[in-house]
Length: 200
Image 1: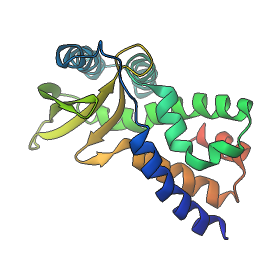
Image 2: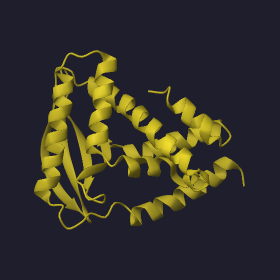
Image 3: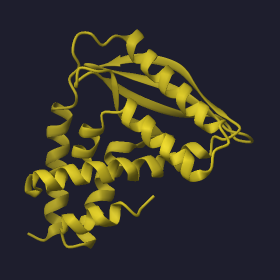
Image 4: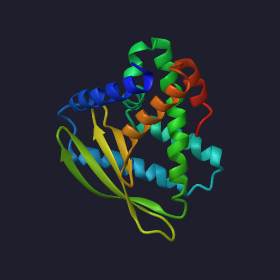
């Protein structure tokens, strides 16, 4: 079966499995603690936006924020998808590190668009066994739009494991992007990791 066809089939199957195996929080997670996490995340993002730092300085801060507030291991594993089955432990570790830098730069660019604006938490609701925290992004000269975070305590800490910006799903978007990168490199994981370090 060609790589692309196999990937489409496997990704669909993985989507079903991942939905069933999505982060399952401990009983300690509450609406209040989920909101508290995103309040702190939003405060840190707003601080960086207002800092006046250079682009590279902002990206370093966004990487720190991403590492502090997100379930990086889950997000990286989801993004790698079925290809993680054939990756060595060293490759998985290298991918996770490269992916964290890549995603911080990529979404950091989106958050840099908020300079002069802000994020504001607007609501929290329980969805299955985790919480969805909604925020509004206010940008200069634009209508507000929604940025949504999914929060769980699967790791024993309250962390977000997915994010939507204007309805675009981080997990699904990055799984598609990483899969496409691997297809273009004929499935070469090491080459994909090396190239990922250069991308923003």
